[in-house]
Image (cartoon, rainbow, N blue to C red; front, side, top):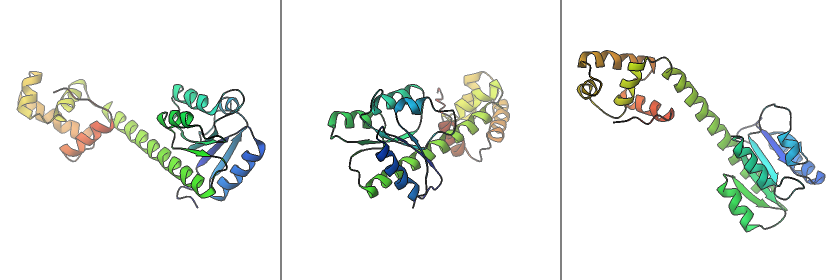
Length: 208
């Protein structure tokens, strides 16, 4: 059984019997399932919850599995993908993995191997969601800073001392201390190390 039960897994395959068999296997592991007969069907689905993992057939009429991967990347999709191919396509496998696929399996797929790949894909998706939520939370805190506090924050996380920051900004050291204290409070950081971690999560590149 999955360590992340209830996650949504999407299956994109033009073969009805394959879709049915994969859906049965995935459901048996505790996941929810949505099936699609083509890449186009998936792309034009009603806007609902995005699957945490997509099982995609490589060769399908219309858009191929690799083309679907490209389309999702262009659209900014963050879904974890596991490819399932009826052919041992080395070039396709390399392209898929370079595109960020979690795994590339060949039919007939071993059930245990497939479920292991799905579990890794779902775990990866959940981790990415947590990181994104954390970054958004930090961005929210950043918006509470004044322009001067933001300047002090950007310099503090480089390791600059108060007197160096004061010289850089052309203000007195006492004022830097006040701004620094407010930054720590608004960012809810208990230490400089924690403040640096928050800056890293927010993707801030401070200029020294």
